[in-house]
Image 1 (cartoon, rainbow, N blue to C red):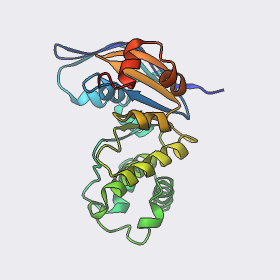
Image 2: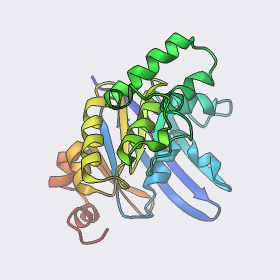
Image 3: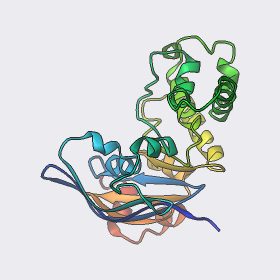
Length: 252
């Protein structure tokens, strides 16, 4: 049986006077790839950032409703936001490695926790780089600058950095939009492998990409969750005319 790992209940979100998310109810399943699609400005990335509280960094944010990780309220008063971000890793649109060595990029999140030995950190760095399909490319230059890597390698490094903390969820915010087709294909293949161990939630503008790699698809429009279900069903027999119009290119 597949468990729900992330849920929202009647989620509303405002930035100042701007009403961005409107009564969103979503149940994301563990060890699956779920894609969030929709036109620009519909609230996809804002919804994604609710799951690791990245929206907290934006002034004048107001949230109503519930956001849960395995039934734990992520917005409860005493929630440790740092721990949430270890459990829910995130990779952004543009690769953003730290201006440090390849090794230090992956080890950083482990080192700041202060509870791992050097050998444990070394093992987890290697495991994370292997999981991100980067180990063979960098194992002989772990102490070289991360910024010297190609764009595709940098994005896989950012993924390894998240994986080193053994998260339960990985959030991907348009992770291939700045990459060439070859690097994009690698990230997509990687998602299909990683879902055996972790829940993946991906925001993408690329409808074909959502069709290729996701098990479930959520279509958003003007801050509302219009339709959500198995990707094959949403793509072939959408229930809502707006979903059909978006998928067929009437608007986007």
